[in-house]
Structures are given as structure tokens and as C-alpha cells.
Length: 433
Figure 1 (tube, one colour):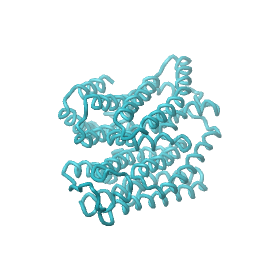
Figure 2: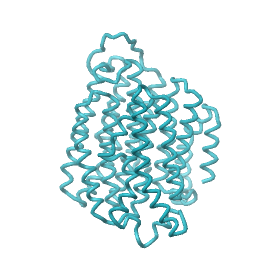
Figure 3: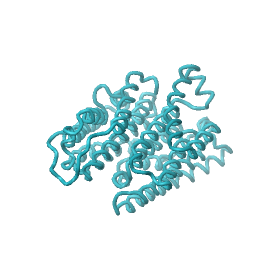
Figure 4: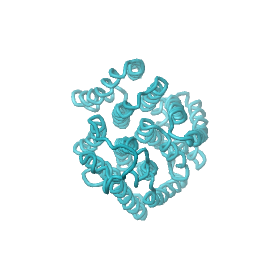
């Protein structure tokens, strides 16, 4: 823990160039340590498991790419400080083994993204979007705090693995289960409590959208994985699973009709979260591993899609699909990268997302075969809106507007390609996660 705090303090006070160097070297250092000392010895030494290491690597990588995406925006000191504070809270959330400290950092991450949306959002709707996010997540997390304090006082410890060794699960009844998982379902978010996410994505600047989709949503999945060992097999979990899957199927069908670039990408995140909830609630090794793979793959993929969407917005000053068509005429190389991101978004062939969906489908066959029809509809409509997203923005001719179209520069190509090649690398070596 002290190592994480020391590293975070260096990142907070160091210049931008030093922070970029630290962030770029961390994934290589962790991979080297795993190769030299072995995964078991290294993780035992750091008191981490592969879930924590996987999400930390994803967090560092997305933060690095976010900094380069915001480089052209001339960050003010206040916005720069908020991004650093948000990064620090995310790293500490994934690093702590204390339930109370995890809850503290879990809620701490809400304040920086709230201030980022309010202060640097694009339109006046940013106030409504930030309030939606604040009240949804705040009211859902208060019952969780009551439950954590009550059980921590009874056991006289906040260490999460000691809680796991207790004989009686925390979520013994329907009310306790809802109190335990409610905050994480809102953070995902699950269908019925997802209204804050599209508003926050649309109004947030590009860096906020990248971290929100890439990392912040994964806090809900990480918390669900950690508390899944406490859940008792109650009927409320099956109801949550049905609502999540049916809602994911409905939203995947609705996504086909959207004309706003960022709204379509944001709603696709809710669809993916439905599959992650399916894997975690099953509490099986296949389901949890599939959920973790989709979490990592979706974090990288959605961050790349929001970054690419912002590149189009900077040139057309519009999020409408009809206004952004013909990007293939500007840069064919960027069109290929955008196509690969769209394919990864619906779990197409030769992508890391497909591996996670295969694990979830195999797990679903043993859990409840009738749910396969809903998952099949989600996969079908996900492919439909992803291909519509590609065809609407890349094909066709450029509109004759008052804006000037400039070619894609090397920085932008590097950002998008850095979102694509990790998905291919992880597919070739799935044991890394």
C-alpha cells in the first residue's frame, strides 16, 4: 500500500513529461516482474491477485492515453489537478484490501468526475447530467455504507478476506442483498438505473469520457466480484439477472436508431455491463473470468471509441452521424483502426471481447439455457449498431460545410492504435489476464 501511495504522490506532483514516462513504464515493469519472479510469488509479495493487477494495468494504460488525448486542449491547472485526483482515487480503489477504505475511494472518485463535468462540459445540460450522476450513485451507496459499518463492527476488522471467511454471508436476505449490490449496480450501471450514464458521457470532455467508460464503470464490476463471495443464493439475484439481461437486449435494439455518436457509444456500454452482471452473479469460475475479460476489453475498446469520436467532433463540431460521414476520404488508416474498434465493440472475430463472450455463453448454458435467446439478441443488435456506426461515419462523401477538414496527425494515430493493439496482444496471450 505504501508503494502505491508513494507512486501516486510522485505522479501527482511531477511534471507532465515525468508522469507520462511513469505511466508508460508501469505496465512493462509489472509484466517483467511477473515474468521474472512468477505470478504467484509476485502477487503474494504485493498482496494482489490477478483481478487487481489486470484492472490496474488497464487503468494506467487508459490514464496515459487520456493525457495524450487531452494534450491538444491545453489543460488548465484546475482540470489537470482533477484528472490527477481521479487517477489517484482509481488506483487506490483497486489496491486496497480494506472494505471501508475501498468504499471511501469508491465514493471519492465521484467528486472529481462531477467537478470535471460541471466545469468543463460542453453544454448547459452538464449541470443536469452531473446532478443525475451524483444523486443516483450517492443514494445507492448509502445502504452499502450502513451494511459495511454494521458488519465491520461485529467482526472487529475491515479486512475483506477475513469477512469472506465468516460462516454466514452478509447478503442473507433480499433486503441485505439489495443493500449490498445496489451501489455497484448503479455504478455499472444496470438497466433502470442507467439514465445518468449517457448524459454524463455526452457532456463530459474527452478525457472524462475515456476514464468514465474505461475505468470508472469497472469499479462496479470490481466491487461485485469482491462481494460476490458474501452473497447468499436468494431469489432477488435471479430477478436482477433477468432485469439486466432483458434491459440489455432492449437497449441494444434501441441503439440502432440513435443518430448521436457519443450517445450510441454510451448506450453500448450499458449493453456490455448486462453481460458482465450475468457472469458475476453466476459466481462460477467461467462466469467471473468471462466478466473480467469483458471488463478489460470493454475498458480499452470504449476508451478508444470515445477518443476517436472526439477526433471527429474536433473536425465537424457535430456529434451527428450524418455530419461525420466520409472520414474514409481523410485517412484510410484511421478508418481501418475505427473498423477494428467497432468489431471489438460487438465481440467480433479475432478480438479479446469474443473470448470473454464465449466464456459467458458456456457458463450460461450450465446456468440457464433459456437466457441464450436474450444473449443471442444482444449479440445480433450489438453487431448491427456497431456496423451502422462504422458505415455512417466512414463511408460516403464529405459534406460541404463551413468547417475545415484536416488530416489525422501522428499523435491521433498513436492514440487510436494504442487502443487497438492491446486487444490483439491479449487475445494472443489470454493468460496475461
